[in-house]
Image 1 (cartoon, rainbow, N blue to C red):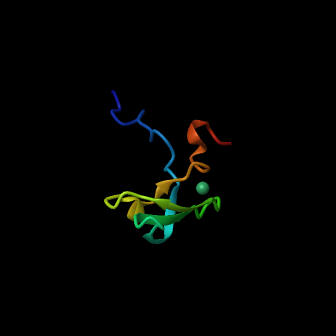
Image 2 (cartoon, protein in one colour; image 1 turned 30 degrees about the horizontal axis):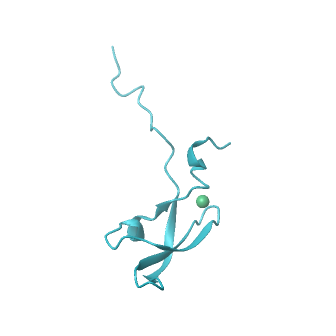
Length: 73
Ligand SMILES: [Zn+2]
């Protein structure tokens, strides 16, 4: 008997997100947020983001922790 779900694995481990530790306006008057990764400590400083961005709530994927495409460990 075929197990429909037996062979399905998550495609990737959950992505590590950098979270906005602060938000406001950039010096150019655009929406911006300060993103930091709580896992590796990566701090990208302030980045402009689209006003409609969900990044403020969801965060941004951390390039360090997500390996930028190559496997870690
Ligand atoms: Zn990280």
